[in-house]
Amino acid sequence: MSIFVVGAAGLSQTQLVADEPTSTPNDQATLLETFRKEFVAITPGMNKFPAEFQFGPSNEPSAVKVTLNRNFEISKYETYQSIYESVMGQNPSRWKSPRNAVETVSYDQAMEFCAKATELMRAAKLINANEIIRLPTEIEWEYCAKAGTSTVYSFGDDPRAPDDAKSQASILNEYGWYSWNSKGKNPAVGDLKPNPWGLYDFHGNYWEICGDEWTDSLAEVAAEPHKYYRKTNEKIVLSAIRGGCWRDHYSMLRSAARTTTLTMQTTNWIGFRCVLIKESTK
Image (tube, rainbow, N blue to C red; front, side, top):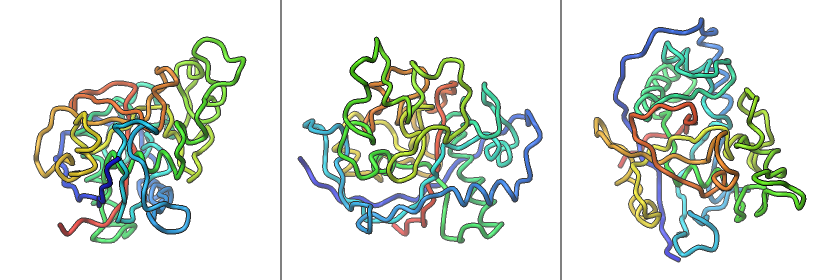
């Protein structure tokens, strides 16, 4: 097992042209204030937050030990539609409801939301001038998904009860939306149980976009995280997504599960959540 020490990268985003609004957004000042309050402080090496964690599937050779050396905050919820629409002026989601996670968004649209939210929250003095909203790195995302655990899921190794049928995973039902329990549901963010750090929907609901360009190698991501995180005006083709979604088999909701998507792709099974961090001086 290799050991790497990583920090977090700053980020600049490119702008896209927004579509027309699909509904009247709520008061923006109130939404931004609520959004700010929903970030959870993550302090690696202090209190309940370990400095090191295993990045990748437990007990597999591909996993690497990573040490995080920067504090950050992460939203306890996936980005929901009312805040997205208030910032972006439009709501692309198929299943519309103010507190539902926004979906049918591309990597570029998620990046643009982060850039605009940063400007608005600085202007409202909700964050400092040296702080930014951005997408999480894969390392940040998985660190928060595992929430100090070393099990396959944040609640344990087995998502199934002994009498579960077919693709049912009744233990997982309490924590994540997947193919078995999502049919006919239209859930708001945070409807199910959180992980040990009070973070919701890391298992399922929607695949979440990370800021990293896709690479197959976990060791490469851990050794050179800045290499894979998008730079100013740099176009990439494939980005990493995490967490599984409402249409997936329960095995895709594992804490270390990862896959890739085209950065321009918009589907109703991909969303995102945000990180708040001081800009890197590197």
